[in-house]
Image (cartoon, rainbow, N blue to C red; front, side, top):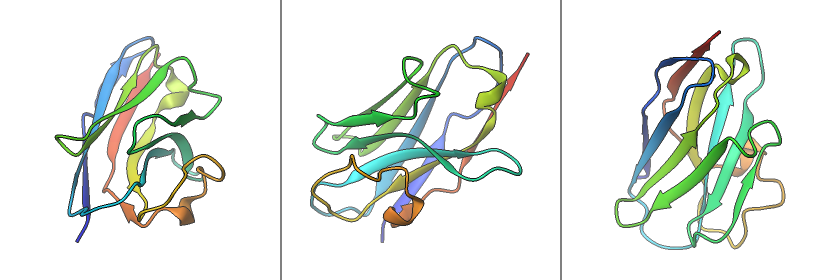
Length: 128
């Protein structure tokens, strides 16, 4: 059984930085896609970034490109989201999501139904 556990959420000031972690367990084999989504109150869940577990492909939402970096440590089965220059509009619950084995991660990566596994979320609050 696959489990995803996020950590690292916190309250920070405008312009601050945070690093979120997603520890995965229960995966056995196969290239898959690991993503970060976020959801603010009253808003739809939106894709933030995705990475293929082969490590070479990453994609970002336009609103975070240049500020956020997704990475992974396969030895630790952990995916990270380094967030810099945080803004109040980044305030949301952040979720880690993972797919079953699939070949590519790019096209359609922001579609929530693509992901079979979700974590419980970690709250990020940015104050001005």
